[in-house]
Length: 368
View 1 (cartoon, rainbow, N blue to C red):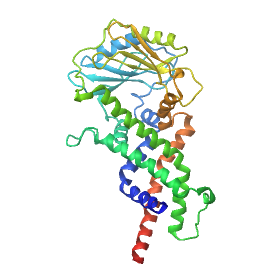
View 2 (cartoon, rainbow, N blue to C red):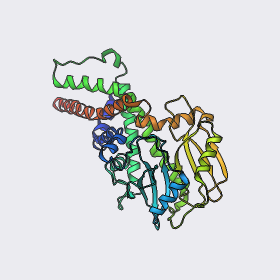
View 3 (cartoon, one colour):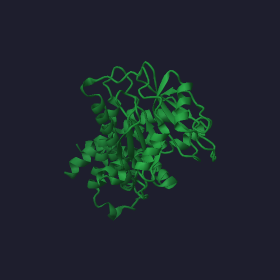
View 4 (spheres, rainbow, N blue to C red):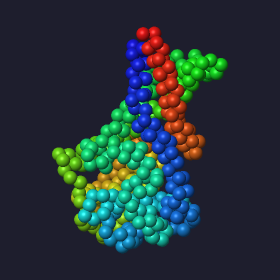
């Protein structure tokens, strides 16, 4: 069985090498997306750190609508006072179902960038490449082909990690062995086993969490558009202008003690509510900033429901932790550096693994 597994391990690595390396290399770069955006777009994505207060959300909403009369707000990522990032507002162009992204100065209400389509900025393009391999927008391919391939590659990474650990299940016996004075085949074989063993815990985490998000997108699409229902074409505002968004956020903070709002989801399809996402107080660094929510009626602002992540099961908390685990944002700069470095190890594994596979294949052919 180990021999068969070794063969599958090798062929899977050869077949999936190129798209897998693209995903790993882009993911390694995107660990530092915030820093790259601030460096490449200092006047758009970044803000000077000051104590100047934010304008009220209701006033900011009015100013966004005034500056973008041909768009409607779909969602809005908000940051606290003293943060160094501009708010990110995602809007939908009227007459379409196409989402755009704009940056907002929450202290003045001025837009720092005009709405741009997905993939306009370098890091956003890398995100599209990472998740879909840029295949989702090609008209001659099935819908969501890029996500399907991404899911397959997540399963491939999971198989490669598990099969590698099974084949070298006694890895600790020779973990630090590198036969530098031997043939290149022996050196590459030892290097492949060592790097693969050290990187496997993080790579397995990335495989599981990445595959989960691909499945989640399919699930949400199926729930919202079951039976082939089309996406809503934005033609008019789907919420009442008289709803005070600040009161919704204040109410959500009263329902969950210590709650900090981080993301607003506006009704972008008929009958959807206002949703306030945020983080409830917790000592668990793995829980995301979007795990707890409160919902409100889009026309009246009346309270509908609350979901406090702290009151949920260990399973719900585990799924919520996937966000920080996938992006490596739970332990500061050291973890981000580790995640980025591990994201580069598949390149070394591909080189060493391909060389070992090719040399052993030539040896078998010579024997025959």
